[in-house]
Length: 143
Image (cartoon, rainbow, N blue to C red):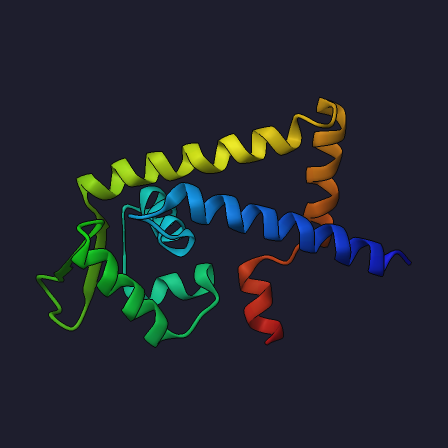
């Protein structure tokens, strides 16, 4: 097993990624907010509880995150017309612009990292990481 070596490389990569994302997204966006915008761009509208599997956090933390995002104009919240208990979250125009900027920041970093290896090895890396990763739904079942 190569667990110690893997842990060192993984830790360094995660740290470098986090530092790059924090610097590149600041001051108007965080990595968690980018995740929310990315999911909203795909799903169009969601209930706050729908974000929990994507963010791996508590309902209270999701509410606080969405509060900040709404205050900063990144998302819109509106009550369902038929069931007032339901709140729908959608992405705002500003949120779409920040989403595009966030993807550019992330893509620039990952392109730089992946450019160090061949296209074949990039495909192999993605395949191998897919083999060891856990889907969000599977992680919830295990917890």
